[in-house]
Each structure stands twice: as C-alpha cells, then as structure tokens.
Image 1 (cartoon, helix red, strand yellow):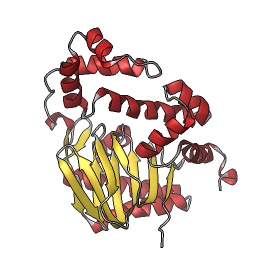
Image 2 (image 1 turned 90 degrees about the horizontal axis):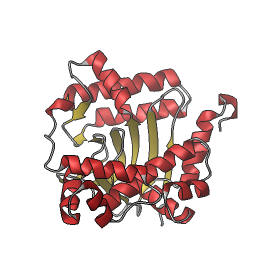
Image 3 (image 1 turned 90 degrees about the vertical axis):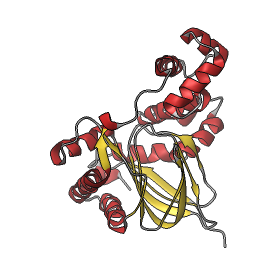
Length: 282
C-alpha cells in the first residue's frame, strides 16, 4: 500500500513569530538550506535523517531535532516508510525573549545539541501544535514558551561562545550582500568574484566556509525566503516567481517545496487563513 505524503505549513495568530509544520514524508527530501528561524522538531513516527555540518544524524519517534538559525542542513527519510514530525520555527526574537526571562544567557542563544532522545519534550512540541489546531491561543503560547525554556536551560550557550569568524568572511559577506540585492539577475561567479576583489575559487572556498553553501545554493535559498515574503503579502505564485528570479512558476514550485516542505500555493492559502477573521478560517 502506498503511503500518502501530507504536509501543512502554517501560522497561528496567537503565536506571532512562530511557523508550524506538521508533515508525513516518504519520498520527499529537503535540499541543503538554512532557515532564519530556529528549528525545534518532534519526530512522531518513522525515522528522519538530517544532514548537518558535522555529519549525518538520525531521529526516531520521540526524538527532538534542534537547529540554529542559518545552519545549513538537509532532511530525508531515514527508513523506507519515511517519517512524520511536528516542527516549530520560532524567530530569533521569540527565543531571545524567552532566554532573557528564564536564563542568564546573553545575546541570541545557540543550541549546542542537534538530536535528542527526549520523548517528554517531543510530547510538549506536539501539545503546542494541538493547542494551535484547536484555536487555543493561550495554551499554545504557554506550551511554546515552556518548550523553548526547557531547551534553553538544557542545551544552549550564549551566541558569543560560537565559532570564530572564518578566513575570508569579509569577502563572503560582500558577495552575499551583492547576491541579495540582485536576486532576479545575479552575476556569474567570475563577475561576483571580480566585484568583491578575489578569484572564483577563493570566493567559493570563503563563501562555503562562511555559510555552509556555495553561492548558487545560497541564492536559491534566499530566493525562496524572498518568495515567502511576497506570498505573505498576497502576491500570486506566478508573479512571485518572476520577481525573485525563478524562470517560471514550476521552477519556484520545485525549489520552494524542497526547502519549505509544501508548494507555494498551499503555503499562501494557510497564510491567508491567518489574516482572515477567526469566523472565516476553516
């Protein structure tokens, strides 16, 4: 029997700054990408494989996955039957606010663990989802803060304790900024290297060392982020594709699903539900 994949990527108005994903994947894979939010995920069935800078990890039912903002990673089925999970994507501002109230951490916190065998926390993450799905904003917000506080207390450092800047970080940052301002018409690698004053291979090494991705992969991820912002404001997927530099809507659909986990049309329908009055939300 073929198992049907399903996913819902959404946001509840009572949880500002937090996205939610509930999904069952079998064949779907997430290409290497990074989020501007944290990832706090509970695996509820099967096994998820996660490709991280330090190597591959696996998380089974009852496992919790923690990924810091801007950390490149992949995700894929770790067993033939795939995996199901519930994910919280809290913004750095949300996590920093909880840290300021509950810890002595300074600056934006950084998780120092990636995969935990922690069924208690996994159930707490599921409780956030269920409260949001039941439109119980008070319970959802309470459970969210308890989950974040628990993970911060057990598995976090101050951001200042993170890795030191890599060689060539300045060149990589200038190249990243140039790409961000020219999403729809990016320069070639040779042109980009010339504009930041280095050679193509030196730029490749510096960029990947700084951001974990080569420039073309970072550009795709940034285009998807820009697409999300446009979709959130009601721009159609077709117009969004053209605005951020994809060749057409199918091109956007393919990359969007491989990074966000749902197609842009499904993503936008859920965001519109958030903007509608409660009486009009399904």
